[in-house]
Length: 446
Image 1 (cartoon, one colour):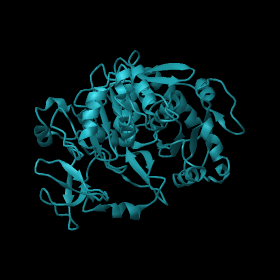
Image 2 (image 1 turned 90 degrees about the vertical axis):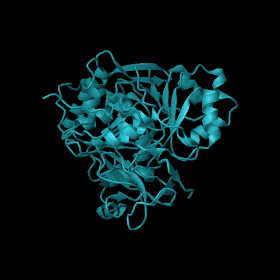
Image 3 (image 1 turned 60 degrees about the vertical axis):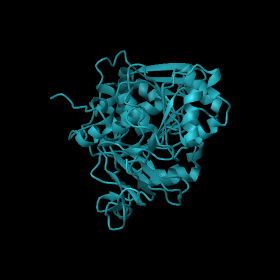
Image 4 (image 1 turned 180 degrees about the vertical axis):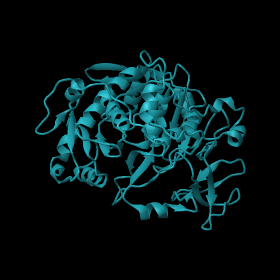
């Protein structure tokens, strides 16, 4: 039986209203994100998946190359004793090694714990202990932050060091060299068959929390994000689209709202780490890499707006920018169109339920200040403590409802917190707002 790789194909609907009425989830019983990324595309040998931009030069990877290399590293992980359902921490900046490590862990049936290299030593220690990570793949810049507590990690089996993509290098002490081990490994690897609701990722909540929570998402979470991906890209994911984000690859916004959906649709992603974020560097990268679709956090957009007509000196190909973090005002939309030649689509969500509400300029006009409308397939309403749905214009709690493939499975190691997050199947986001008569959702300032 051939594998099922369903896509929403929202462009087939004549209107947003029709899509809301008629769209139905088609989630297969078995689904593996890495298999869908690596084995879905018939022209994988020639289709570009990743362009890695580094100071020393550029590296290009087809989908077949990512498949081949992640098969090899999956073999490395398996030979190191890593098994199905065990956690693999990936502490890497935007890079081919990050993509390969994540895909390999998923192929093994493991659970990826993506962590930003910017965390402090204590932040790393908490997350690695809480996640019970069995393997760590870390770059040289972050490796020193782990030194003081590695021996106290009870379940850690192996540490792989990535030295800036160098193919042959010397790992320190008991560390294993990522590229050397990968190159020596066999590519003969059978992807572990996983249920669609099996855990795939653990994303940690903000470091500002005293006790960050590990938010577990399933393999089907990727399928749950596809309708929003189509919507906030204005239903256009054509053969000319190129995707990039300046955001870290450790967050759900980057992975589930850009990188993995773009690959699912067979589109290339740019990997380029900006050490110090600036308008000039963001614009230069988008121009040089011919980026057409970008996820740019609201804070970065506000910074870019501080420049006078920043697109004037760059040959931009931008069509769509999608953003989240805070509602945008009217001036931001005008600025993006006038200065960048792109439309902005706002998205709304949390780590527990990312991008369930968004704008789509092709389907309905943007109302500045609103975060958009619920994406077809997702039920998002305004409720009160009784879980009654409020009428339009009434302020209450913004809540998505399960079952929903995009909603998180649980808080890792915290069953009581997981139970408290839901009220009669409504996820209590902690945000308050209202839905107007046309279905737009507005978030109240905190």
